[in-house]
Each structure stands twice: as C-alpha cells, then as structure tokens.
Length: 236
Length: 236
DNA sequence: TTGATACTTCGGTATATACCGAAATGATGT
DNA sequence: ACATCATTTCGGTATATACCGAAGTATCAA
Image (tube, rainbow over all chains, first blue to last red; front, side, top):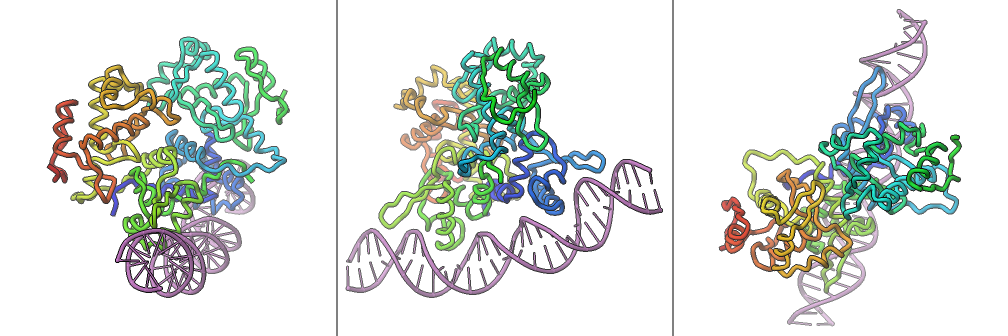
C-alpha cells in the first residue's frame, strides 16, 4: 500500500511495557543475560525469551553468546539515541511526595547508554561549558583547545574519535533534569575515563552510578564541581 | 515501580499501523480533518475518531476547530523530529520491481513536516553545500555569508530564525534517498519561499510536491540543479 | 553418566483493543 | 424548521498477543 518505512512495527516493539523495560535496562550500555532481564522485569524467563527474539528480529538488540549465557545489548548507538529522543517527549510519571530511594539514585548519576546523565552528567557538562573546555554552538558541542588538551592528558585519542562514524559531541536532553548533558563519542570516552580513574563505579543492579569519595574530591579540585553528597553515597 | 519516563505508552500509540498512518500523513506539516485521515487510512470515521482522541490524550497531536471541521496536526516540531528519527531506523519495505506511481512521486519531492525531502530535498541541499551557501560541519549546517545574502534576498529574516527556540539548521537523514537533506528553521523557511515563488506546489492528496516548469528552470539557472523530469510532472 | 543451570519452544488461557454498525451531537446552509 | 455533513459515543465481535506451566535443548561441572 504505502512504501514508507514501517515505523509502526518497531514502535509496536517498544510499545510493550515489558519490552520497554528491557530496552531501558540495556540503555545502561552493558550487555545483560536473559535471566537478569527477566528478574528486573518481574516476568518469567520464557516470557523474556519471547520478547528478546522479537527485539532481535526487529533489529533493536543483538546477542553475544558466552558459554551457556547469552548477553543481550542494544544493536547500535543510533538505537540508543532514538530511545533517548523518545524519553524526552514521554510523560514523566508524577513523583510521589516521598520519592523512594532507587529513583533518587538514578536521578543523581547514571549512564545513558554510554555517556553520563543525571545530576552528575548535567553538572559536568555545564562546568565544562562555563570553563570553556566545551563550546556550545547551540546544536553541537565543539572542543576548545583547552578541552582537547584535557582529553589528551586522559589518554583519549581525539582524532580517532573524530573519524568515527557516530556523532562527535552533542547535547542530549536529560529527562530527569530537563537540561542538557554531553553525548556522542566524546561523552562515551569521558565515562570510560571516569570509570578507569575510579571516580565513579557502576552499581550492580541498575544503571545508576556511584560517585566515590576520591571522585568527588577530584571533580571539585579540577572542575570546581560540587555535588549534593547526601544521596546514597556509602563508598569511601 | 520505576520512575523513568513512560516510553512504552507513547511507543504503543505509534505502534498501531493505523495511527502510524495518521502520523505519517501529518508529517506533511499540514493540518488534516478526521474524515480525510480516515479516507487515507482506509478505515471508517468512527475508528479514526477513536485513534485521534488517543493521540490527543497522548500529547502527540492537537486540534484546531474550524466550523464543523476539526483539523488535526502534530503538536510540535519535536514530535516530528522524533518520528523522523524513528523512520531512519525503521526497515524500508522491499520495493517491488515495478514501483507504482504514487511512491515514485513521494520519492521525487515531498515535505517532511515542514522542510523539503526526497530527491528534490537532497539535490537542493547538496547543491547548496557544494556551492557554499551552506557549510556542513558534520552535525550541523552553518549559513555562509553567501547563504545569508541569498535568504535575505528572499525576504527571509535570518536573525529572527536564529532567535527561535527550535534548531536552526541541521541534516536530516532522508529515508528514501538514504542521504541528508536540510531541516530545522532554515529548512522550513526555504519551503515557504519555494511555495510562494510557485517553484513547487502541494499535491492535494499527499505530502508529495510537484515541481512547476517555472521552478525547474529557476532551480537550474540559480543553482545548476537538474532533476529527472520524467516523473509525474504534468504542470506546465 | 548424572545433575544443575541457562535458555528456548510449545500449548492453552486470559486480556486488551482495533474495527464496524447504529445512533447521538453539533454546526451549516436552505 | 429541516436536511446534510463532520465527528463522536456506544455496544458487540473478532483477532492479536502477553503471560505462564510444562517440556525440550544446550552447556557446564561433578
């Protein structure tokens, strides 16, 4: 009938609550086995298995086999970006007065597929713009010379990042903060550094991040970033 | 349970084939009455009415009442951009050997919400980049001085466009051509000029555009753009 | 081999919802 | 007032599909 792309089929894939849950979990950027995804979605493994094959047939996720586990992950950064775009226009469920602990952690610091998000992501991005490591051109971020030197000092090969097919650096609207954070190839490599330097650690069971005491000091010393320390930061 | 945005609900909205059809038609940027949408989707008015209220409750479309008609349109350019993003990752249904006439028209020239797309959109964009009206920075388009003068000569207030909250100029991946065309505030005003100058006309029943003979000459004279003329161009 | 774990396939049920026919509402023109 | 057209509401049916229990394959560790 019509020869336009079949938007409906993939939207329908995302449209099921359980599958949306799977995708949201994979937005953490890490590969997860089927059972773990089943646990998080509160359904049985059979059910998750069915959903995963559909997502795979739809081209949204891929599998990597390792022994008797099968690790599922998003197929490409483009898929992740599409999901982020969806998140920005999706309604945020109204927050109860006493917001529970778990979402607070997520709001505090998390990974958004492969870059920093949450209060931490926004704080770092805004500090860098203010201190002119980054230049906000309105639709893109550009690295200043100062910024290039910073990344070079972290052993990040900026030229290699530029050659990648994916976007270099752009502002991604944060759904919890309603402000922009740094995404793209640069954003991804920044998270890698934060993890390597042990400024943040991944929590086991969610895509929330934990800022270490060490990391908090470093962020303050180097970029004058002060974060609210009260939330759930029990690592020394 | 989770406090993340409810991606599933709006994805489910887009996930129904009939509703996706509605949204695709509204991507033409024009407001359409319910009956027209019903006709295009090959369903009865009752059915469309139900879908439209759901889309309205979901915040994807708005209504403008005019007499006994109700004109529906996409609620915001952000919604349009999200749909375009979806289109780029959605599978393109395989084209039959003898591609029918209607999709050929769409592939030839169409509006994508409010800017040019299809072969025409890509041709104009690439010509402008080559002739340095536009500068392709990879993730954004910048207007050169030459480009600013061109738009000024068309009575387009470039400064006013820059002040708008929406993106100024960026490349939008064309689903039919698999190449980029110009989108954003600049793209929208360019279409307005093309229509005002009668270089193109809207077809009544789709978002395909018709290039006038007058327009073809102008495009060739001013930008050295040659378009395949064979397709469905019966206007002198 | 036996037993355990990870995952998939099959079959049946239960729920959601897209669709249409019939009828109500509302606006327009005569 | 009446007839007409655009749109919505209601009720009933038919189809799709998410879910789980049970059983089957595959991998690993004794």
